[in-house]
Length: 399
Image 1 (cartoon, rainbow, N blue to C red):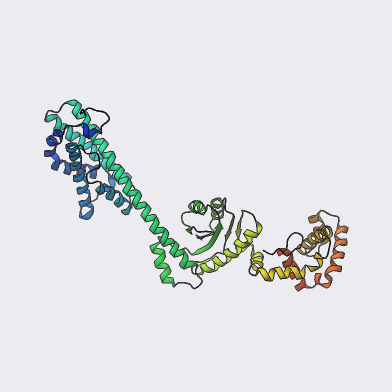
Image 2 (image 1 turned 60 degrees about the vertical axis):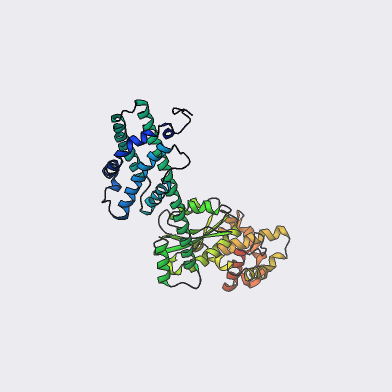
């Protein structure tokens, strides 16, 4: 195959003799490249001592030596020392830097290397077309190194995310369990999970077939563990301005969602219990709105014991079930409004859009059905609870 075949990679189109011409200047070029990187890439301006300095020097030596190896061998199967550049990419994340600094260092090294190698090649009498191909080969080679480091950076990101996810799930479990872990254990777990323990938290629970997607939309400081069928999370500083709107936006598409009471973090298990009850209220409501436990205390009381609540509805509203559907519906809505407005006729009439006389007539019918229960405080409270838990027709459809 001819040397100038454009289908071959740039270093394959160079005569192996080019590498032999350039190799003598390699040791000095290594030092010059390191100096250029320190000068042009701010994150690398610190003293190149210890392991960091050794890794940088090894990387530069491997890069320059590996390039000449490719020119000599023409082997495109594998970059020499590729694992070094994968490791450099991983190391950037561990050092807390983005990949930009390393890629900038590659570019600075490539530019200097091209100038020095081109000068050496020109002094050795290499023809201009050879020097052009040399330039193309250097920058194609740097692209390969950059891709290897990007792969290492992505690998480290994935591994770090997996470890952090596992640690955060463990922390969420410790904070949520009924038999609370010791504060020192929780504090240690929080430090390992890189999640600062907030002064106040609230448990969040939601159901969704796309829980992972919703979890990624939650604010980044929310401690979340996606699961099926219910995903749990702990929300720091739940009363902060705009926090509720953030949660509601993120929860768009959830079948049911609930937020527990706001508590200090050692009491997170209590908020989890409240969120669990509130989630049952959300399911019963059938709506997509976030149910906030502190705004639905009565429903939470009723949700604690479904059997008892159903018995309350059946026994206290039994007189309504003896009626035909039409009268039962009218008297049920009248009883609900009459209890809500403390027996005030006019507000009841306005709420039902009927004449006050109609309200008086219906209340007389209710008195025949319920007797003194309408006037006794304890009985009225039980009726109000039963009506809250009942369906629109007074049937025992407890939450």
